[in-house]
Amino acid sequence: MDKIRIKNYQIASFIFVSILGTLLHFTYKFFGENIFVASFSAVNESVWEHLKLLFFPMVLTIIIGYFYIGKNVSNFLCSKALGIISAMLFIIIFFYTYIEIIGKSIVFIDIASFFVAVILGEYLAYKLMMSDFKCNNIIAITILIIILMCFVVFTYCTPKIEIFRDPVFNQYGIIKDIGN
Image (cartoon, rainbow, N blue to C red; front, side, top):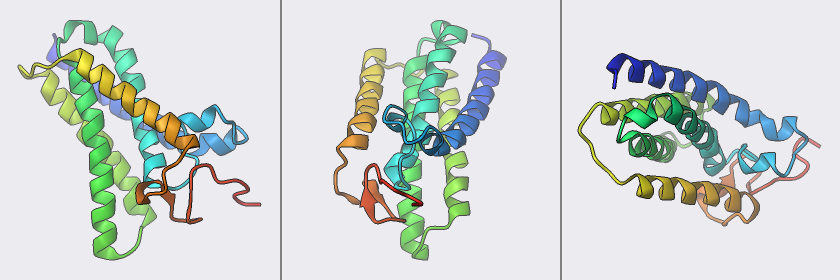
């Protein structure tokens, strides 16, 4: 596969994920707290809900990219899946580490970490696609489907653990009457 084509796809993927991920922060409210939109949009300010902003656009780039370059890159699905997982782990680890050090969340740092995570995930996927890395695509797809199902289920049946807690309202899951 053409290295330039893969590189251009990854750059386009970064731009797409950055824009769509940013928009997904607002779509739940924009669509009148639509229950379907809640499945893939942030419904509160928890770390978990913010992972949706990364996950769903990156999955879309897998679907789009599969038809553009994926059929010709044997490790495409695994590379992109590992890119998503690494980006999500970066957000979680970075957020809780800097909060522990500083003692509070800073919006600018949170936003910047999203973009750094996208860069990291797309770069890792690119490097893996350009390597001799081999993996099982069925396992990659299965893991992505499990993560997707967790996002949907936990939107409506939210566990009461820290990653799911909205720090603004100190609540979990879909929060009603925000701003009323």
